[in-house]
Length: 164
Image (cartoon, rainbow, N blue to C red; front, side, top):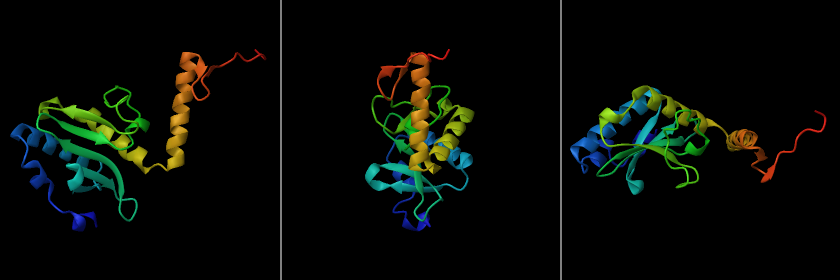
């Protein structure tokens, strides 16, 4: 369905970039399609990137992108702030509120298994409802508060339980 709406093929978008960035983008495209085989791929002309949608609704659910630039390529995740990233690979904290990404300058820099895991995690998080994502964020804040000795949502320390 989305393919019929595609204005230009991904290859046409990538033509204008240096060969090394094209190779990197092709490698990332392949990984995204391997991680989520049913994904819809299309160029978002206005954003100068290749976007990926999950086939969950009529127009899909946008969850990831490959964004080439002259000196590197980003693999980004629309709901990255909610993703589990145990290896701490995602970039963007403190720069954007929601989106997170990986940056590569060559295909050899791509560690296949961790990137596949992040793509699958990005798809899983995008498939959640807004309420489920909010609950996940609150749970994460509770975990941070417990390890830092406070309640992050209320900005105050957690008091000891008097029953103990």
